[in-house]
Length: 434
Picture 1: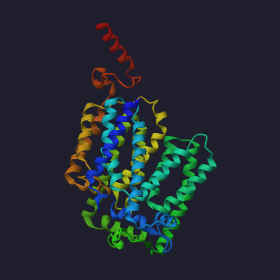
Picture 2 (picture 1 turned 180 degrees about the horizontal axis):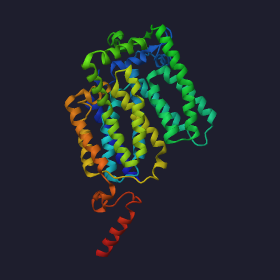
Picture 3 (picture 1 turned 90 degrees about the horizontal axis):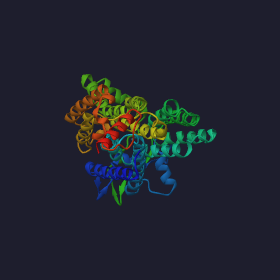
Picture 4 (picture 1 turned 60 degrees about the vertical axis):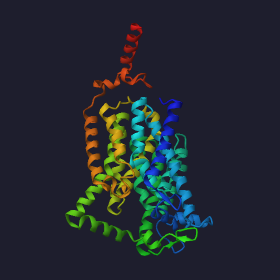
């Protein structure tokens, strides 16, 4: 179990990691760290020119008599959302890693936080509306999904949430939907989780069909001018792209599957680059916390893959799916403690820090689109490290590892059933020697 001092140490480490990511990504604009124009521009869309996709956030600001083109206002709201989401993720990760002893817990915690697929993607995509949806979803699961909750109330709440989330950003369906499905049938398997899934489907699917229909027949949208004080920030026609889904699908299919060998190679590179870190971290977490963890995390990333047919942000979507499912899984951390936690082999304890130092956000500045493919040398090195780490995990057997010995770990935080007898014998020998 994590002691109070240990939890404080991990939280301080997380805060330093977040600040480091902000500095590495060089987000300073106009004298302060600020989001990119594309994500900030998502808040400028409203329904003033008629119904259009992604107009909900801008319309909410307008209803509150706020300027939905004010870059400083959008920046303040966006950072508040990102920091809150990061705090939720950090707390979830600490709960998941509680069964581990101090050394492997610290190594794995640091490696996961430093990954561009976790903290890096949150900082790179500040002001992304999907972050607001994820935070809203996690709030609903925290306060509503309890064993004694009213099932009808959960269905109604998640029906409303499903409709609103699609109006904010239609791509959220590929993250929230799989997370609820996995919670209902693979993780929690409770009636409240299935009620939440039912409510979300009832709200999200009709709204998605309505959005597609309306977008195909009406593409005119009211977009406020993004500005910093009295200075306009670029032409909005180049920042915001609200073309029909049909035209976007045709463009992506043409670029990927009708551009010869080059198109296929680029698509494979981006897909591999986006999947490598989430799948490798899923494998590591699965070997330490139980194979079901690995299976659920890998499935969540795979279920978001159909979105790549119409979108280009492979790295962003793969990371979001991994993050959301990891946080959702932490709700059931108490039940997972019944499983015997596995240790990390020494080669992997060496590989994880090297991988974290190699795949830094200042090197992979375009991780949102290409994943590790943003830098070919980094991608090759990361694939080799992940391959070596994966083989180490597959071949390693905890019972044969000297890392379970107390002379390496000193005094363990927790004693698992598989090693308790060994520790008792070693303590008895020490007492006899003294």
